[in-house]
Picture (cartoon, helix red, strand yellow):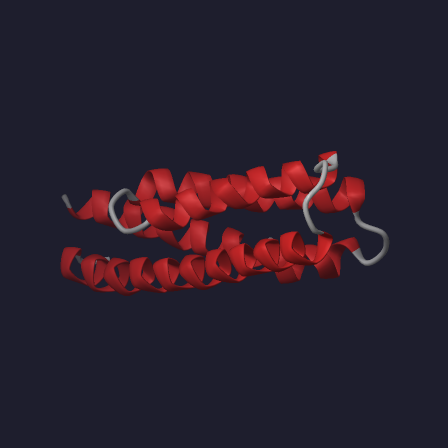
Amino acid sequence: MLEGQKYRIARPLRWVGRIIASIAAIWFVLVLIGSAITEGVGPMPIESGTLVLIGVVGLAGCIASWWRDMTAGILLVLTSIGLGVHIGCFAGHSHVLAWSIIGLPYLVAGVLLLYSRWLSKQVQ
């Protein structure tokens, strides 16, 4: 592939990854805030604590996607893996469906950012 073609492919991939990560992170934070409001003040169970930690990593990946593609891609893929493990341990039924709704957007955004970074490195 020619250098100009790689750059023309990498740039939209980066933007799509950023947009997907932003939408997923905003939606996830709103879900966590809504859950905190409905549960009220009290001790936080381990399931909620790990979910908040995973949400913070996903939000950090979303914010990092605007400056550091490699760091953001790794954080977003780790968020997807963390959500998969969390769903596998604590969810009831339909693990694949739950992960595809919650974790798959992070995986797609992370892979897009990592691939655009790889294409950009080949151009330079």
